[in-house]
Image (tube, rainbow, N blue to C red; front, side):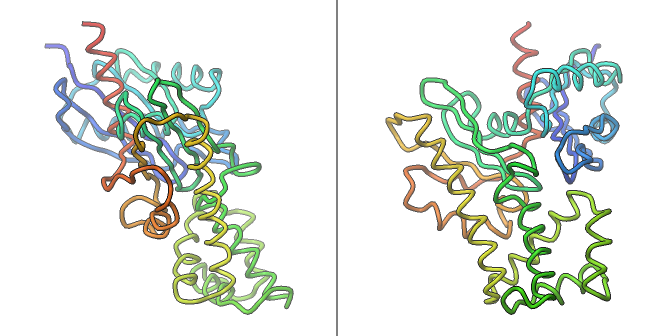
Amino acid sequence: MKSRSVIGVDGGGTTTRAVVLDDRAGELGRGQAGPALTDADGGTIEIDALAAAAERAAENAGVPLPVAALCAGVAGVGREAERTAVQAALAGRGIASTSRVVTDAEAALFDAFSDGPGILLIAGTGSIAWGRAEDGREARAGGWGSLIGDEGSGYHIGLRGLRAAVRAADGRGGETELLPQLAAQLGTAEPEDLVTWTTSAAKSEIAGLAPLVCDLARTGDAIAATIVDAALASLTNHLAALLARLAPWNAPPGFALGGGLISPGGPLRDALVVATADYPCVPLAGEVDAARGAALMALRRLLEKD
C-alpha cells in the first residue's frame, strides 16, 4: 500500500529538525541534521540538511520513501522565488510525492494556532513575529535578516556581547566580565584572538554566545544587562506591532513563544513573559514545534485532496 505518511521539516540557522506523522496526525519518528542556513544573511539554504533530516526521520519511523507529502518550514524563504527554488530542489530528492515550502514562522504559527487567531514570536538564531487576526488577516514583524533586522535574536545578543568585550579591552566601555568569560568559552588567549574567531564563525556560533550574555546579566553584570534589556525591548516591540496591526481583537489573542531563547527553559523566556505581562494577550505555556506544524500543514493539504 502506498505510504500515507507525511514529513514536516523545520530548517533554521542552528539545527534542522524533521518529524513523520501518519494520516491521523500520530507521530512516528523524528530526525535532525545541521543548519539549513549557512551565511550571516540567511541567503544560502542547504537542501542537503533539509533532505537529511527528513530521510533520518523516515528511517527512524520505519516509513519507506517517498511519503505522501512533505512540507518544509525554512527561515530565509520569505520571497516566492526562494520558496519555488527550494521546493523544486526538494521535489528532486524523491522524499515525497508532493512537496511544499513555507517559512519557519508560518509552520510554527500553524502548530500553535492551526487556522485560528494568535501571535507567534520566534527568537533563536534570528527573530521574527507572525500573527493572524480574528478575520484571517496575517502580518509579520521582523525577520529582515542579520544585517538589517533580527533584533533581539541570539545572533544580535552574541554579537553585541563580542563588541562590548573588545570595547572593554580598549578601556572604552564599562567594567564587564564579558571579555574573560567569552575568552574562556571560546578558548582565546588574547582579545585580538576574538577577531580571528569572529571572522570565521558561523551565524549559529555567534548566536551560541547569547546564553552566556544572559547568564552574566542575571548575575549583575551591568553591560550584559544592558544588552539583554535591549533585546527584550526589541522583542516586545515585535509583539506590540502585531497587536496593533491585526486589531481589533474581540478577546485577547494567544501569544506563542518559540526559538531557543524564549521556548520553555530558554534563557529569555521568563524575562519576556514578565516584560509582556501588561500586554493584551495570553502567553501559551506549551512548546511550539515548527516541524510538527509543517507536518500538519502537509497533512491538511493531503486530506483536502481526498
